[in-house]
Amino acid sequence: MKWLKYILKGLLTVVMIALLAIVVTSVSLIYNFQKPTPFRGNDIFNPYRNISKEHCWKRANFHTHTRVEGILNECDHTAEQTLDYYEKFDYDIVTFSNHNELTVHPTEPSQSLNLYEHGYNICKFHKLVFGCTKVNRFDHLLPIFTSQKQFLIDMLSRESDIVVLNHPLRTHAMTERDFERLEGYRIVELDSGKSTENSYWDTALSAGIYSFALANDDLHYPDRTRAIAIRSNFLCTPSGSYQDVCRTLNEGGYYSMRVPDYGGGDWQAKIEGNSTLPQIKSIGVSGQSPYIALTEVADSIVVTGQNHTTLAVAYSADSLGYTMLPKDSYSRFTAYFGGGEVIYSNPFARYNAESQSTPFRTTHSVNIVLTALYNAIIALIAALLIYKIVKLW
Image 1 (cartoon, one colour):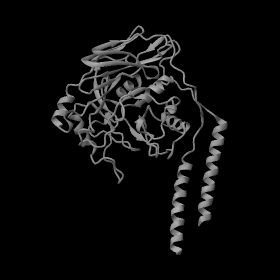
Image 2 (cartoon, helix red, strand yellow; image 1 turned 30 degrees about the vertical axis):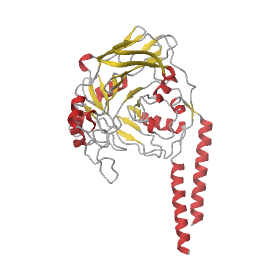
Image 3 (tube, helix red, strand yellow; image 1 turned 180 degrees about the horizontal axis):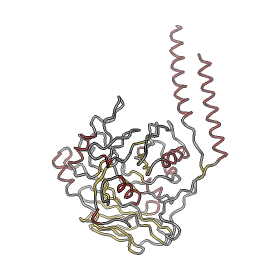
Image 4 (spheres, helix red, strand yellow; image 1 turned 45 degrees about the vertical axis):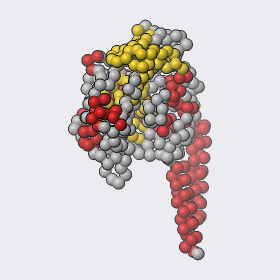
């Protein structure tokens, strides 16, 4: 049974090589993280401070997959075919975020945002990376520690304009504790389909970690009505050029929206439903009071604050203002409509305008001792696995 011995040795070798790959790609800095500290200050940050009504609103999706070269494909449709589907729903901006590959816009190269989705790890810790010149191929195959995730965010932030944390509710090993500590990303992706509550976003905001939000289709099947035009973003931007879009995303002058699959498979009903979506008519801050006004009456408008607490609710209303109390660290609006549409605003947060331009912060630092110890252990385990593989044969 000599052949069986070699088969078992071969299988064991494959397992050890897989473990070696996980270990080798686990190298990381180890960080000191600040304790959760709610936003403080006498001023209220208004993400809509720079919007101009004549530029509102342009509909956009930033998370779109298409056919790529090679055998590893998540989508059978080309960028041109996918864009044709989106144009049925009057999208102004569609970007293509294929995994670890930059995809040029098929008709408007100026709208190519040098965008890709980073990550092929086991945990699906994926990030949208805007404004890079090339794809960064490094990834932790098993990013289970908060410091590993922070290391990847910092690495990508240094070589790009914007980093977005994708579908956190579908990311394995992503915990609320991670969101209380991770910094450096600009935007978090909302509404993965499992929940409309977006509790992780509130966890980060309650810890004093500010971010905007996007709701994207994460499209793989443009020919399925239930997959396309079900999450959207509406930007107040002069054009779809990279310069304008990047500035708008960095400043926060946009809102996100969950859209029903009108018609449940009837394409004409879906097109008609998407042509009459409710919108934000005006939004901003007056003194200490964030406010929102809508083009249609909503079933309810909810103000959410610290620890996902409901601060105020207006029923059967098309507007709502809320005066933030000194104890309110932030507030954000969610409008629920009878047809199933949901609008999410970016958050209004306390800060000190004299010393801060925005509530964004980066406070984590490298723990040199733990970094050296951690990576020494990684090197030791890798050496042991290599020794075992060599000895086995």
